[in-house]
Image (tube, rainbow, N blue to C red; front, top):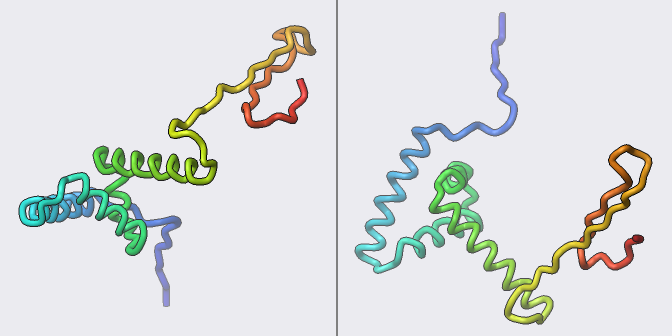
Length: 130
């Protein structure tokens, strides 16, 4: 008796047909929600994406979001806004987020023909040696 089994490493990729079906179903649902519930397109996309990230964790829907520019842009903006709000609540800082520029140092003389070392240090790191 001969046993044959094909083993696939990693996660199964979402096919183009699955992405097309997901896109079609979401487009119909979005049209119905906009028409009858009065939600905006952005509110619908954010609600579906957050529900999937929080409760459902459907990989195929997540793949659709990642490959759709509009959905991905809204996800990134929402995540950045959330991170900025977390920063403000933790630091109690000003309304504007201030990102200081890094410190750049270089040694002109060194062991190589190009010179010495180059160093780029973050401004919040205060205990570095120059």
